[in-house]
Structure formats: structure tokens, C-alpha cells
Image (cartoon, rainbow over all chains, first blue to last red):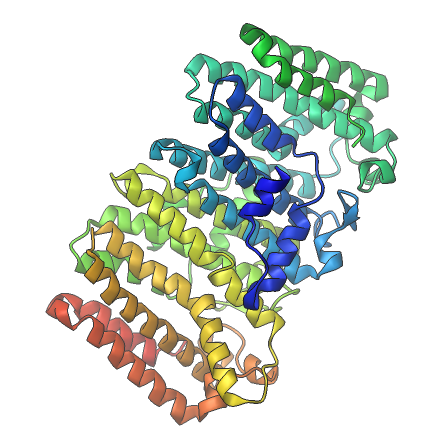
Length: 285
Length: 285
């Protein structure tokens, strides 16, 4: 992924050298690359070719990084640290951070239109259209809006849980779902495959978020590469504030089992996607 | 356009109602709609169907409005007034303005993937890919980066003019070129048609920008619906600062003639696109 990302990001040169450099700074040299990994490994599980999957994974990571850059802005989460490095608006400035995010989002769509993604133009169009939906107001941006404008959830815990589950299904779940579905589309997945992948990604996405809440509650900033304890500090409802640390861990473990069960039908071919569940449940950052 | 835009923008409802409302506020009820007009009228001149052209024009206008919202942010041009109304970050806040722009850019790509754009998926992909290039670092964003980070051009006028011509070819020219080319693609334009349209759009785009500089120098904010005299106040080189008011008007008039000449071969069918040149040269806002 590091090599592939370096290749799709334009080399800094000419009057646009600064923003091209900022894009490379933001994208390269950090991050778990979970979404790209899921896309590529899903395609592999179903017998798809690597070339198109790796390129589509680059586009997806560009969208993910754009969302991080904008989320970190002073007017949003105001974070100074991301992936263990100063955030883009700290290294450059706010204008550059806005434009750098815009440029990465735009680049993602340009990448997905390339013939190397898939020989069938209908598949390329599907990946493009689905990315727009998954990252738009019905997906990631919708989740971010909920997160920013309704941070102080009601004190009725049941409502809180429904709300944060919906919020996270949009904010992080939509792109995780997109990763897995796109890997499926590239590999010519059947409707049954796509449905199995849907169940897997829904459970994995929620487990991912619960783990995030656990890390936010007990992690330390240095290990995570970003600020810790922010959500509790803001009085936000999280899966930990609702279920407690142990309850949240239990809930994540159950979701992990559900995710693996959804892929049981693929036997050993699903080993990597199943071990990814363990990675998500045990990750330290 | 107003009706078509209202239709493609989702109705405000649910937890995302605020951002959907902000998107409608930003897009509807203002603006010259020059880029949509150019796209639709180019398609008409070459015998293309209206439905796809109007929808593609909606996508293009979403990208234009996203760029205005982000350009108006305090960290960029810091404008309070746009199209005669308070800017999005003034009515809502900065976070909403960033997200609202992001959402409109994303929506544009979703729209262009729709079957209603054109029955031929290759044409839809071409419009998608070209939009990403025209609005990215090689296009609009590239021009905005130049505008923000090199506002105090050198005192050597010849260099200044080459620089601002390049800057404007990217910042405003790329989307104007995109409008006309897309109208051509939707109508099945030949290579010769596309080349004629290229010359027309290049000349029109530059004339548009020179007129902008003239309006900025002599216009008043109330008539324009946005701040006036900003560029001179910032010490920016403009076509007016280089050529003077009369010189700039002459240059714009010559470009206008070039634009019309490029379409002479289409005879009366080009009347509307030719009168658009006069509109651009004489516009008050």
C-alpha cells in the first residue's frame, strides 16, 4: 500500500508543489491501512485480481485521509496529533489543510475512473457511485455531522446507544462496508457473497468503533499516535460510558464472533479476514 | 436550473437535516449559473438531449458552489457575503461550511454516475474523470493554491501576467472548459467540435476573469453581491493593475471576439453561446 499510494500521489513539482507535498505528508508513512487491507483481502478471498483492488484501495485510503484532515481542523475536533505526527494544519496551515483534504477526495474519484481498476466500466461506475454514497451525507459526512452537532447525548442510555450505533455506522462503518463490498464487486461476488460480506463488515465496523472507545478510555496518546481521553473529557456518550469497560469488551468480542461466523462458508480462504477481526479487537491504536 | 438543483439536493430530514439545509441554502436562490448554462447550451448547439445535460449541469454547479463555500472560509478569503447573502460559515459555522462543501463535491460525483446522465457508461465515466481532473490540483484547486499562497506577485509585470493567466486558467478556466467539453461529450461531439469548443472556452474563461478584475476594481459590493476592491486592497496583481481599466476592457473585448470566431462554423446554432460572450463582457456581477 505504501508503494502504491506513493505512486498514485502526484510528485510535488511546479506551482502546486506545496499542496502535492502536503498530500504526501498526510497520506504516506502512517496509519493502519485497515480499509485498504479489507478491500484487497476481500477481493483475494473471492479470487479477484490484485492490481485493480490495490488501486481502488488507494482511492479509499485517500478518502479516509481527507476525512481525518478535515476532522482534525480547529473548527472540528481541533487535533494536533494524528498517526503520531503533527496534523496537516499544524505543519502547513488551515487553508492548506482544507484544500489538501479537498484534493484527496477529488483524486479518489479520478483514480476510480481509471481503466486499471477493472476492465468492466460498469464495475468502475459502481465503485465510484458507491464511494460517493458511502462518504456523503448518507454515510461518513452524515456521521461526522451527528458527531459534531450532537455531542452531548441524552442521559437515557438506551437512546444513547441507538444514537451512537447509528452515528458510528455512518462515520466509520460506511467506509468499512464500502471496502469489503468493493473487494467483492471487483472479484465478481454473487448476491449471496455480498450479503455475507455485509454482515461481516457491519459487525467488524461496530467492533472497531467499540475498540476505539476502549482505547480512548484506557489508552495513552503516545501509543495511539493521537489524543486520548477526548470523548470522556467532552462528556460524549461512548460504548464504554454506557456499558463500562468490561461490558464494552464483551460486546466487541460478540461482534467479532458474528463477523467470523458470516465468513464460515468460505473456510480457510477467509482466514485472513477472520484474523483481521482479532487484530481489530486487540489493536493498541 | 433552480428546479433541477432543488430536485437533486436531498430534502432536509433526519439527523442530517442541518447539513442538507445548509447545502440547499448555499446552492439555491442565487448565482449566475454560468457554468450550467454553458454546459446545457453547448449540448443543445450540437443536438444533444436536455435531460442528461441538465443533470450534469447540476453536478457542475455543486462543485462550483463547494469551491465558493471553502474559498469564503476565514482561513482562506474570509468573505461574509456571497451571491448577496451571508456566507455559509456566517449563517451556520465553520465546521458546517467545511462539511457542506465536502458534501456538495461528493454529491457531484454521485450525480454523474447516474444512468440519467447518458445511456453510454463510457460517457458517464469520461464526465466523472474529467470533473475530478478539472476540479483537482491540476485544475481548480491548483489555481486556488496559487491564489492563496502567491498573492504578492513580483513587480515585473510580464511575469505577473503569465502567472495570473495561468492561475485563472486553473482557478476559473478549468470548470468553464469542463462545462463546454461536457456539453460536447453528451452531444457526441467530434474531435473538431471539441477543439472549437476548447478555443471558445479558453477565450471566454479568460475574458470572464478579466471582467471579474474590472468589477472588483470599479464595482460596488451591493450590486455584485460580494465584497469589492479586495484584490487591490491585498496588493494582488490583476489584469487591471497590469493593463489599467481601459487596457483590461480592450483585452477582454478581443478575447470575446476570439471566442465567437471559434464557433463561426456553427452559424445561427451558436447564437446563444455567442451572446453569452457579450453577457460575460458586460455583466455587473
